[in-house]
Length: 456
Ligand code: GLC
Image 1: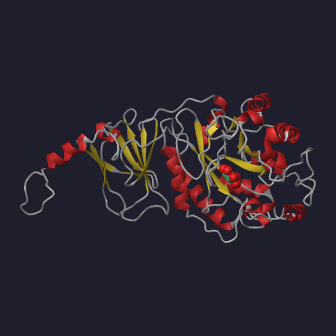
Image 2: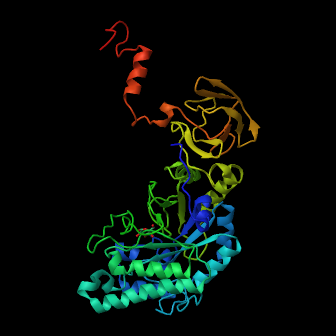
Image 3: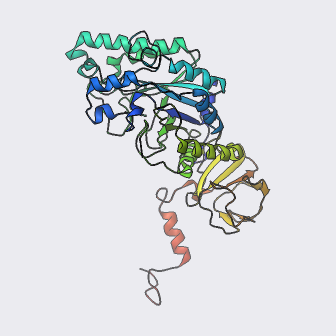
């Protein structure tokens, strides 16, 4: 409420200002079409899976097309799965032959991704799973299998180092799948130091292992173990939006219903549901909002699924006009506007992002105390008449028809930072309940209709 923007090192400003990135979950699992975890969840035969993975040879993979769409969609960066829990690597790693470079495709997909996305001016993120379902030592751990564990640790550290030396500047790094290991076991502190030497400006997420051995947790569908670890530059709420008090955060969300990797027949959420996630990230928390990492699982042949492209571009067109209400903003939720939509702020401006367009010509915004200079329907550029009525602002002249297929935005320019009164600082289900009692009392109503006792 009335948040101040958190100050971040200059090298990280692209992240806080940019707000919106793509998560790309892709690998040989795409061919099965049941998400990225079919190997484990369906207890598939490891050898058969592996043989099939080695034959996987996507003919239509052209990351320049991905980058083109993602740029047009208004996203500012993308994070690509270099290796998921199945252990298959999408780059030419010297540590294993189980990779796109040394199996059927004979291509370094990470290199191609990095080149194409950089060429579009997008920032580069890499996802890396600690867990590798082929390797028992990862799950046995150092106590049960000290030698196997040491080999595994070297393998993981070596691969991360490779990813940070072979491909130029990497802006964002997303670890996952630390469960059941602790950060001491994983050697996260040493690895992080090394990563920062190699890429001093990099942003690293928080899935770095549990605080103590055996404390790892990984609720089904929840965050990776290590979520509570105090290391890492940004939090990673998964399938949910929740601000972190003391650090940056990025909510990762699916565009379908549950799975990250490609799934045949899974339903797609509509574009307005995706856009609402982005606006909610922008308005949530006291540090100036958070980021949205919006996922897509490309098809097994390497193309982006058409329903993704369609919706992503629809949002991109909306952002072309309304982007100032989302990018580089100062947080939001100034007043209790939730019944209509979302609020963000930037400098002296308050943006009303309206989900429910009810066709009435007027909109009453309660609790905005700042003097107002101008009100504009950002969607059309049309200036709107307004009138102060006490601490309410009455905005007039709204069109009956919703002026965009997504959310119309009203921009209110104030004199100074937008401010709210005591009511506006509280929320319906929090704050001082006596204010509501007082309000009900002044209205003089009773629970009885037609002649009951005046007071309970
Ligand atoms: C989860 C899942 C994984 C997905 C990821 C995205 O922990 O195990 O399949 O890649 O998080 O955040």
